[in-house]
Length: 230
Image (cartoon, rainbow, N blue to C red; front, side, top):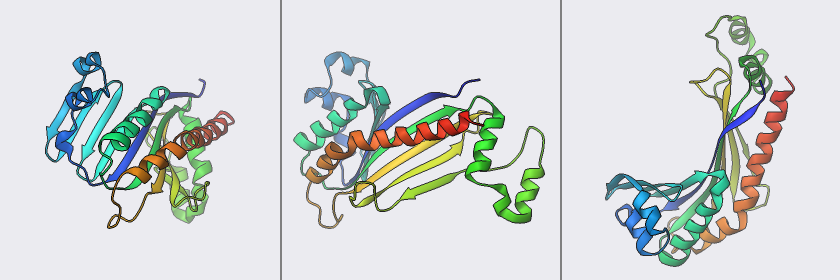
């Protein structure tokens, strides 16, 4: 079986101080950030002073007092960037945002369980774990151990900005041959005790959005090529 991508989601994360109770599909429509049709199709999952969760115009919103997360399928990632620009660049400019995350999650089917196992052994050699590694390698049958999660972090960032770029690789438990790659590009907008608004955060997303999402895809493509070679 061929290696294939089954899920590709992008997200913007803003860390700071927010008021979840104002975030609602009707609030977005009031400010013309979504259409009336999108408002009619929106689904409110949670609406509470401490947390607001809803889906509207192909995007998922998860708003908490200290974190805003807006996500969508990668082929519509421009919607997320525009939404952050509209909310925090025009409406809530005084919201203090100290950190920004540009995230991408990609699920990949390796084609066979053997290929996924080979990837795990390549990324985290069992031989590096001495006698315990030999015990893991000796296991046979449907249930067997191996790499469960691998994290790689780049500091300093590829663009020299304050923050880091990180990738997490793990097998998906509900599948025999699927893996998940979680990419997190973290950028520092300022000191939480000193930051006064969202301007720097919005600018960071403007400057880094496309490049960081492309970097995540490039790394994923290299992993896919590796799997195809097993």
